[in-house]
Length: 311
Length: 305
Image (tube, rainbow over all chains, first blue to last red; front, side, top):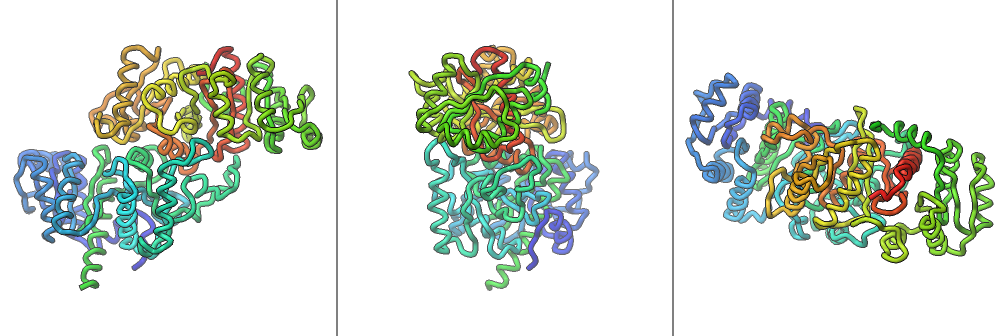
């Protein structure tokens, strides 16, 4: 499997692997419906629309999208919409689920329940991938959406989920940095102690094929002991790890959405044991949404293939 | 006049006349940076430390200016104590970390009897020059406090507002950051942010608009905020970002420096004299900006926090 190095790579692959069935939860907003329309036209997905029939029809009409031929399931209660969609993913009816106008917390709740039923041992975490100019691979921040203050146990599961995603993306031995606000003052941070403990476990092979690097800050990652200079000649981009474990939700969410400000591209998803769930932010625009859907399609495809091999 | 770039800060400082800066146990790099700052008329340095070795280094510095002094001290702690004593007497204006361990320096500053603390909280502000427009961005606290509670955050914000006003921002726009823009009792940062925002509504921070909680997309993008139904003059035009705690603050500042390639400077606030400390992601060029910034804070003639 070739390594996926750019978010743009997903578009080409999604066209090859699609269309895949995607259960779409409450597509009631124009931007989001537009993304579904484009993803369908590009051959990525065959949507199944779940939610308030009237609102879905209105949104479709506004973006000039003929939804007559798609399966529609009428449901108004948010938690019921979410439960129904995630159940379809876990029963194998659809390989992908995508969230529209439902708060993400409902989706997380549904996934947690289904993972428990499936006895998968998998926790729910959000992986936010970044494409950064000058860095020749994708990098991911995680968990950027679920755990408010992950403890050691949660961080282990977050690492395992991210490694799972990177293996699917073709990275055989992803490098991981466990980030911390550790610096020369303020004593030893809890996030730094987590790094130390997690590194020992990674070195023992407890997280499978991956490596935790001995760096917890971007200064260590980018400068590797050198000094920053005005011409930035000491900033190196060839040693950036693939997975960045953030200390807490505030850190993860605040940094990963810097794509609204900096010259980076972002795409987020939840990888469940049964398939990807696209969970765009309420402020994401439709072109970004299409990219997130293409990523879901490719990951779903890779998961299906992996399952076939395992059988 | 409002200062919108690091150059504006350097220019304004040069106009304000030379300040006396004291450096306990200086390292070679400090001397280089200070030689340049002294040559451009920003500061007159006073080095405190082991005289013989200092003279050896200082003597070699081609730019070493007239007026600089070397004062003898036996060890770094003595040098620091002497430096603080001189600041308190008004013999010098600005303190630079020099070779002092940063934790020792902070502890000494905080000390009630011997330190320099004058406000509710000692804090650190990182200053960034926007990568695409003429604008300075303040981020705080990015170094001093690990997990400030709401009263400390109030102090951190007050310190930053004072600095913003020194930089000519008459009514600073503040984003108190959190993971989400809604107040959620399960996420403590959103509660603190809401409290600070309400304090601002009641005029407790003077002429300023404090908006919080704001997630980063709403803070940096007016369009993103509008899509979430959040309408505020702060969105898309933030002067001061207040971070929830240090894990976020330090990593956020580093993200702006490395992913955003933004020039970065900073200064300690809440002390009777400005204090410049060494952060690993600040270049030597921008150290000169920190010195200029400290000079401007002296111009105000009162405490900086």
